[in-house]
Length: 157
Ligand SMILES: C[S@@+](CC[C@H](N)C(=O)[O-])C[C@H]1O[C@@H](n2cnc3c(N)ncnc32)[C@H](O)[C@@H]1O
Image (cartoon, rainbow, N blue to C red; front, side, top):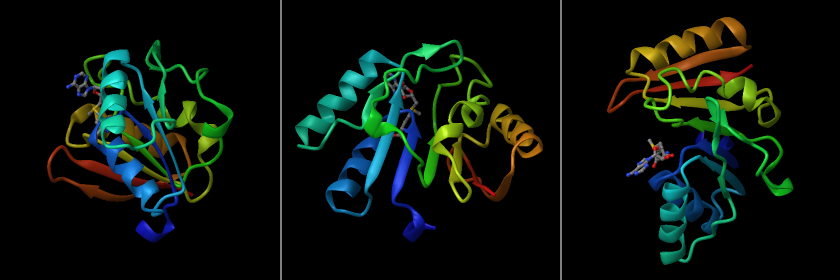
């Protein structure tokens, strides 16, 4: 899987965003996009990137519009397909099944073969979301990882 991934879209910024920028600097990745809804957290993560002289053009401030990120702030260079979508936000406190809209809202970024990883799969709400997705979309559940908060690894067929 690792060798197949050249572009990553993540929902929710943090240490993972720093890691993605380092991967791009080391030419292990060509493209990334991070959606962040919180202006305070977005400002903080950008300051960490700046401190380490890493790029910050790929972290987009996308406030929540209802349950999902407003994608209007995205720039033309953010558009296109991604090889891997990491869903680690919106946080559960904003809405327990708030990550359910992810596949519908991100359809323009997904194509056949795109990997989709949902974090926090040890939670019942995330398990319900995956059950719904498996019924509604052409995706396969490839692996369930139970360590830490759990991950569901899926692939668009
Ligand atoms: C689980 S975090 C995303 C973490 C990131 N994907 C990573 O693995 O490093 C999900 C969201 O929680 C919020 N968040 C996380 N830590 C926070 C903090 N210390 N203060 C405020 N918001 C925080 C941010 O909005 C973030 O996008």
